[in-house]
Length: 491
Ligand code: NAI
Ligand code: MG
Image (cartoon, rainbow, N blue to C red; front, top):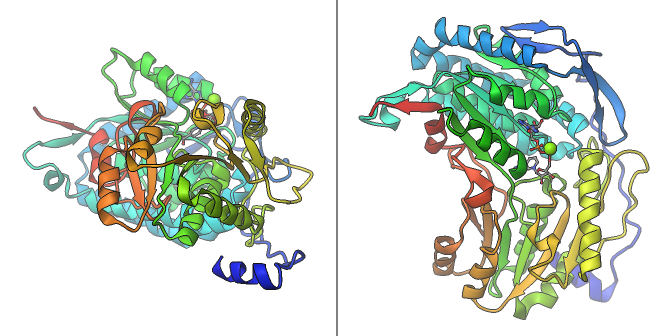
């Protein structure tokens, strides 16, 4: 940015910089025409299927099973049998071996998984390659390390496994969310029935081949595909001991209502509307990079996205000018192009939701900025968007958009920043940009959010717990804390 600043005044920024496209080959991935459900270590033909597509151009990729209550019942039965037949009594050091194997296999096959993830979900290949895959493997490595140390993790509390875990995951980080859920569950001695999101089932289905290579005992992990009806069947199944859900607050509330009084364990990781707060002493160029990463990473399909930017009034104008100029350099396009920064919107339904909320922002009186960019004609696309002149009451400042759309607001004092940042039903994450360590700590103590990043954003690590306050849910994933939801303790 500093380089562009200098050039900007003197010679102008060339408007026609071109770059050669650098498409990643999809030959490494083999997609079957039709998939069934993976139950008890075997593929079971699906009675009903639907088509899963590539959001970049709506190409049909495969037929995928729409799981019925009978499919779910068979999967839960297989998970229960595997739990009773040995998995729950296997020494932790033996369970760890399988997790280590899965982690290494994911690393070995990471290119294949990354291409498939970008094809089926629409995210840029450089993100699936550099973020999703390394982190998914890291989660298996990390929890493999805990499997034989649970007594030390929870001294004097006699931890033991819960039983069968039903896990329902979303479409924004399909394989990574699978890893977040499966790795701690297995490390603690549970077995699993997992339901991927309906728009992005393919990496979970490929993961079944990793389980085969790792020689994981049959039935320890079962995967049933389908939409919300399949998820609901899993939630309602009597023989499931725990539900772990990541997705919308609406469905999370519904699941909580259904499970009330059943005694089943529950963790919910739901939506967010994170505040990214920039003080006037922050390093502005770095802050601009953090803002861009915070909201345009994965097209903004991120529960902890920094979708509300709070800028201290004295730096509002220079910061917004830098941000808008930086947006012009983002490359929106083919997810499989290694040069793409922003890929395709995951589904037609999500695109519709983004459009509707953006229209509401314009109607309510916010000023919209979108850099000039040519969007592909086929597929689902939305240009990176910044709204200024946003009031706190506007829908775009209150509701989760889950797209590449940023709302900019201002503040004068740290107290005002805290008050405005906390003025949301959510509380998943927040960011603070300042050069003063004391101010970072002061802010972090007051922000009602599960994660507070300082002078960075969207950083993830398997050793660090992640989860929400308020309508962002409860329970933690990652770290030592992430073991607890998969364990029972003797009183
Ligand atoms: P969703 O909550 O409907 O879907 C998430 C998962 O839950 C999917 O696997 C889905 O099949 C399943 N599901 C849906 N209804 C269910 C039910 N009644 N019982 C059990 N499982 C059910 O989210 P959706 O409709 O895909 O996205 C809507 C909005 O939710 C997004 O625009 C975004 O704001 C938010 N969202 C938040 C996510 C997060 O990471 N916290 C992830 C996905 C969506
Ligand atoms: Mg839904």
